[in-house]
Length: 466
Image (cartoon, rainbow, N blue to C red; front, side, top):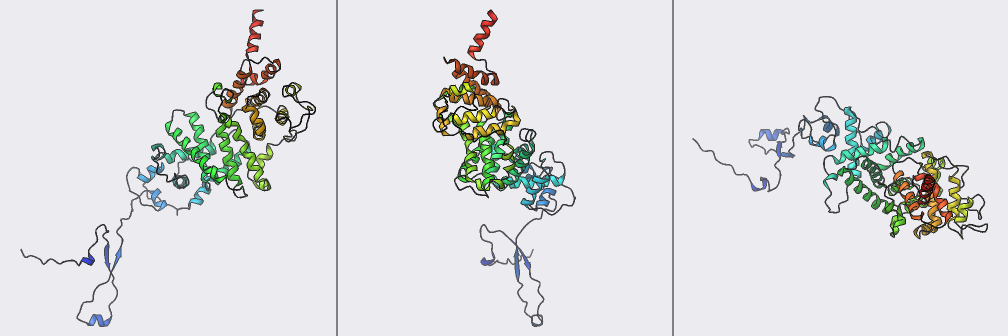
């Protein structure tokens, strides 16, 4: 066998260690006559081209998005990651849309994210999930996140939560039309505002936790999204409120207020009246945050997307700014309990204004439809009244119990347990009072929350024996 001479490759042409090999394609330029006529062979010029393999048999979703598909069957890795159906068909696909167009389409025409069957909707869903993943990407703090936030189903849970907020009965069915319209606008605004999107996903996940209390993945996601909401919102609210950011701040503030008010179980003994911790009253104190924001942006308030909702909460028969001195228009027993005389002013008595607002609320129809009016009372009480509550002043506690009694008629998932628990706690705390006026004033809130006061129970036992 004849041995062939081994040709050595110059060092300059050898690939360096770690360098990728490339195809070398000859440059087939036409030679000049002089080159053809010469007996010498001219050196060929080579151009490098990066090595790659086309994904010709990729799934339709990956082709639509123009990304490389691993061609795994029956579901490629990308489709598994995003929780969408994976199709390998020869069906022609349309040119991909930008994220902004997909988000806009999602808001306007395709809100039913979970109940989607068509291929085009599946592709849109994947694009929306990409946008959500980008928007809610965890900060690079170096901490390892729980697997419930990073596994393949995490994005799918986020999509479910967004759908639940947009179409779920807890947020939509019982809401008046203007509120539903604004909630749709909130979702659109959230796609450009991470802290608002976190608050929306957090609120929806919180409700899902009430439906599925044993679902650990939802619990982990709930804690994470609310933590991100508070951290990012605190930074956002530290800058001046402007026409451009007011709706983002209003919306997130209301989500935070709702979350702080929520109580999952009926536990009167954990109420602030049995605690020495000032933070135990935060569920009420935080409700004043929206009032602060509204004052900061009062010039642009008519331009807010919430303007119609705010105006709807107004009632011509209710004057929440009624700060008249004296007892005119007040319940005489409550006025006596609060020590209000004809000469009392709002400056001399921190209970006068809350009592006047309460008197107006007693005249409105009781029920969920009056929630926004009831919330106005909660959002307007000032620090002087909070100080009375922290000292456990009996008249202030009775006024709060009356308001909680009205709120007991509101059938909202984030309201019911808190108001019943706190109203019951105040009745328990004050039912041993030796003042007959206090006991008399407790009867209304006790009847609203379903608590039988001790003196009423004793009265019923006497009547039964007689």
